[in-house]
Amino acid sequence: MGRSLFRFVDALELCTAYIFCFFLNLLFDYVKTLDLGPYILKDFFKNFTDYQTLIIFLFTFIVIVFHYQMLHRKKTEVYCRILVGDTILNITIRYSLDCLMILGFVYLLSILINVYLNFNLTSNLYLVFIFITYILISARQVRKYENF
Amino acid sequence: MKIFKFFITKIFLRKAILSISIILLLFMANYTTFIATRSILSTFQGYQEIKCMNQEGIYIANLDPDSDVDIDAIGENGTQIVYDYLNNNFNYAFYTDGFMVSLPNIDDMEISLCYMNEEYYELNQFELSQGTDLDFDYQFDKDKEIPILIGKGLSKTYPVGSTIKIEDPVLEQPITLIVQGVLKQNAYHSNFYALNSKNYYNFSIFLPVNAEFIKNANIDLQLNGLMDIVILQTTKEKTVDLSEVMQDNLGLKFNFFSQEENFDYFKEYYLYSLKIMSITTLILLVIITCLSIWNALVSIRLMLRDFTINLLVGLSYSKLRKIFYSYFGILFFINLIVIFSITAYNRYECWLRKDATFATYGFFGLIGMDWFALLVVFLSDIIIGKIIVENMLRKIKKIPISLGVLQ
Image (cartoon, rainbow over the protein chains, first blue to last red):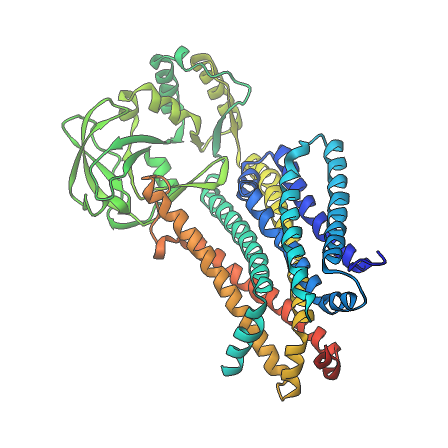
């Protein structure tokens, strides 16, 4: 991470945000497979499982917040890097690759858990697409800090 | 007010993503609290309703889950023998509903007929808004009028004293009914085996039945009535004999549960469910509160310079605290409005669907338990708001003003 915009804490923070969203999706899938027994419990959890995608989508907002605040904090660093010879394109590519690497790691982890629990492997694929979209949008934001 | 307006427009809304994100998190906290409170309250109301059944000497019938039901094999003769046995040996509370009829009314709803005998009516103590109690000692004769109670939704079209002519689905013949009273609005009946599930009587007709009426009714009423029949002032041994009579004549195995068994069932089934629901809600609330605190601290990190510049030019911490509380007050208010709108729409949807069993009356369509759940959401918002604001202020106080300004 020598030339990356990410410090260890940032990587950990993003990793936690991704893990939280994937874990939530997994939890919903797990609750759906449970035989909850009493009708009252089924009825209660139905209020959440019926809106699984929407609820998880809303929670993915924490990843947007992460990207937003991360880039905001790093705007001086981006500018300084450009001053010492780095290019905005390289910074953007490195930033995107770092995000994708963290996402890939968390997705692999979730696949392993899905295999272990015998769940559908594609059930959380939509999250990957959502997060890639966020990464692409935030990568465009890096360009904003070319001029301090 | 001026400074608050400045903070909202120039500081908080300038980084709208953070405000949107916190609104969404708080919305999920509110939604979870609302759903959990309503479910718990609805179950509690259901339990209060069936508590009258949990008395010494009362046994409630329940079809054995392993018993094969072959309706075609059951004859009217079989059910009549069972009712004769019941009439000769027991006092019983009879109730069955779900028989729909079309009856002109201003809301164009399908009407549900609820048949009950005197014992069931007395056991449940229904409250009336107009008229007098049901009379069960009428002579069953197709030319005579049967006294009935109606739900609030029918009271405008059929005021007390008016007569209604219907083709009765269980007698399979036209009968004349006379409105004797109107039930209180949103009178309900909870399902014995799903206490949180309710049917509302706003578009129902209570038809009093006696032994003669049951005798003349078709097998649908007779059999449905047996499914949840409540035997009063009896003993376990007598219910075993009754169960045998039912098995011999209907081919169905019925179990009869006593007060203690029902209470144990409640403890095992409902208390367990309520515990799981409460724990799940609490865990979700803790997680969402933690995420909201993280979000708030991120906001502080990004808006630190704005806050500290204002502190430098004379804004006090107590004033800043007030601004934060007002800001979160607005966010919570938005969320409460959203939850209120969703609930009101859900209630209104029942009217749009012409769903007579769930149509309710209330201010903006919301009923008592909705308002109570909103109150609980409001109280939980106060707690969550306090936790978030105090954490934000602690974070701001930790950073020296001079350092904050330089950021």
